[in-house]
Length: 166
Figure 1 (tube, one colour):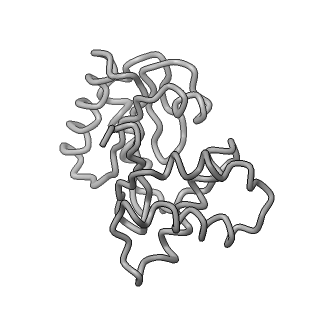
Figure 2 (spheres, helix red, strand yellow):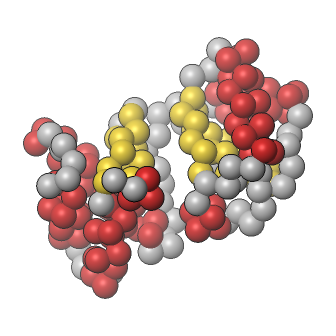
């Protein structure tokens, strides 16, 4: 299955890969304005056949699918998150890869657990309101765009974000 058909969604403390969600969202974009429950249920029905979704977790999955649907429509969405969330934005150029490696090294030095995601899709990057790479988001706050922050700045930002309640 092609990688571009895999969408990472947040479920409580975990990230889960779902296949077919992007296609299902595209199919249902015309449903904009319908009740949340109706859209979430339709998304669940469309992706269930190609993904394992335990019956006990269907409500949680539907909430996650609803968030992805709203994001696809360009609406602001509050992510469910516990802990530190870091996004490296960039197409995979050497500077973006170096930023990811440096962030991981600083996290290891500080002993901070974090969810680190490297967003390579330029449509997703611009949807986040960022128009230069490499870029760094910590708990959805843009910390750097078009530059590699130095080690000390990274330590300061991560320490501050790791200490604040999420």
